[in-house]
Length: 91
Image (cartoon, rainbow, N blue to C red; front, side):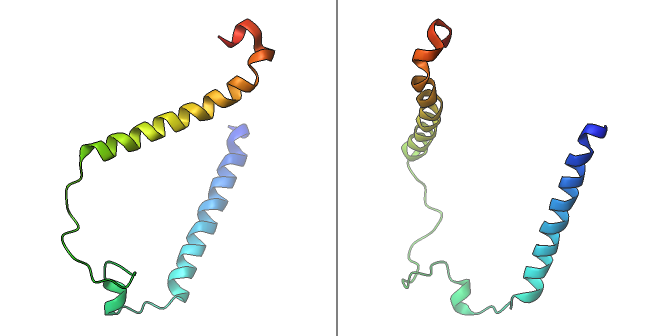
């Protein structure tokens, strides 16, 4: 239990600082609501069409494949650098 006391103190400090900053940001910032802030887009164009359109499932599959191969490269690249030093244990 004594080994985790520093972790608990750190978590208490982090939660305290985060809550203080959150309360401070809500109390200091003005809450002005107008028509322009409530619009969907801020690029100058009026929104057209429905925002709940269906997308092709291939977009999601492509995104998942990108994440998969991106993580694979992250782990294979350092392994390939040290391949000569590891010898037979690298396989």
